Image (cartoon, rainbow, N blue to C red; front, side, top):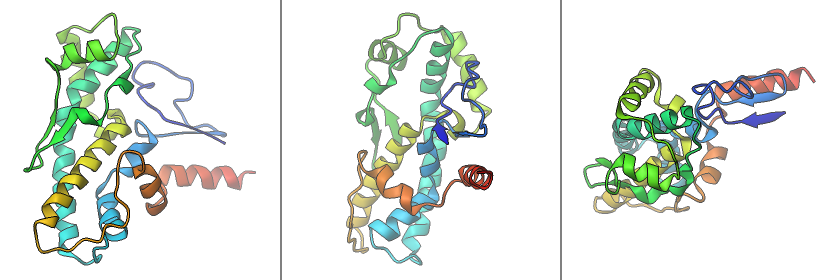
Length: 218
């Protein structure tokens, strides 16, 4: 059995490894990390890692705040992902690994921002090492294409994890100034979040169905 992230392959006409086959599982989302980012993840972290009681009203409030953040970061990341997809369609191979979590800030009001220097497309072109950039009209058209789809289909899972970590950092600062006492067992960061979350969350339904069917046929 083999496992592969879908990435943007279906958008650029790549057919190899874009559909689940007998010995191959392909994520429905951009990548496996997208499955880890949800309100369920927030509740799990607050109970398992922060030591809050599962009936605490603080968990419900935190989940509501994160739901709003998910709606917000969808719009913040849309121009970036539209640029990335449009650039790949030109035959370029932008290196997005040159951009890390430091690009993202979350203020005291949970407002998210990406810190481009001097602006988004100049920054992306320079840092991602591309020779040909899409024109504004193409980027706008690609944005409309992605906007009609669920966020997790086109947003990189790594970037969703950034938002989750920034949210938890901000939430921790807020809670510490209140009456809730925390006993954080495992501080969460970009290096350990997958390791901490994956064993604690339910198996994604599409992966579970694939494994059940595949193992049943052996």
